[in-house]
Length: 275
Length: 287
Image (cartoon, rainbow over all chains, first blue to last red; front, top):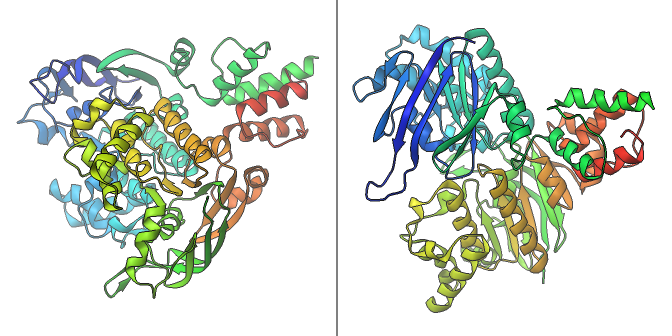
């Protein structure tokens, strides 16, 4: 794992300054280059607020954010946004273009990219999300899942070092979701893309490098998925952990350590052969 | 009385002035039994949301007709006839928080009932009742819906639909974007409304475990057509077909198939939930 690409120190934020309650209070964490961090937590725990702060859409009351060595300020935010891209939860919030390809190209036009360079970038991004066939369509008339793919393509075309996904896969069918996650994973390995995914899908969180749990605007804990799912029994765990708990309730022996699905299949089959 | 929904040769597209988009529904025949709980699944863009819209007159068939209870929706109809349908069919959109518009939560929830002729005082009573049923505190009624978190907005939007006391409930991914606990609460709430009030419920979802837990029947859509409509166990027993339609099986079923393949055995039944799988594993003596 590389060196820190994102450093967040003592980040504090509230929407309404008259209120006592802080949406985020003293949030600190770092993310390494090429790392996949999953952020989980209940609705209202401050995840989306954090995402908006990271790209400079909101300004913190206290604390600092450093991206690729540059501190995020009002002056530096345009420069910093070349390194970090946010995909919103609701893709309707970020459509600009009248065709899918125009929309994906919008971000590139903003950074003054030449037409010759832009075309392959747009095509490649659309290919990665499997939307090439729709390049002439009107983005506002696509289905929910197709819109989410286009929104992701718009960010991928910019080739950011960090991509922040705020529940950006919820409208996709499970198969498309797995495919897109594996595309992102390839980018992570090939181009050291850093991924920050805000999610409620524990199967998605389980494939990350590290999970950060948030509660009422604070970081509760962070660690590898194996550790988090064993320690936090009240979390809705991935399927295999649910199965193990169910078996345990019936008085059966199960592996103590965190198990992936393949390991569990092997374990079950082996235990049978021993009998 | 629970309501039946009938589609006869329904073809539809999103017509906008002279521009016609490709057909999103293609000669659909469908009979949804009164009082049933049906999940609609399929690849993105297969026509799931459009099917729901056709049920409450937001998408009018260009050919064929839709019958909800005693009301018929077809292209030659007077638009006013749609009011009857919309009163009976409560629809929760994808991102229902985008349905919100009132200055206060109370205004927002009262809008539906007031539109259908319920007096203001009674509408306020209803608002108070439903807001608690979706698990929110009544003090929220005086707040602006836009100051709420995503999960809270979702609940308010659903409360607004429940306040209209619909006979048919159509929901387009009501759980997307909610935390697992919140999602379970919303779906449990919908499920208990379905049973207590004898509603006919249709639910679009990508979560096969929700299908396994809440639905009785499943409609599989592919490219604007219904390719399968059966009870859930029969649908999920047909895993080869499902792969062709880009549809997943519930986690428990997927795991069962892996074990069956590894061991070269077949379990007695198609397991859809963790509980069923646990029983089956114990029964065949794997644990």
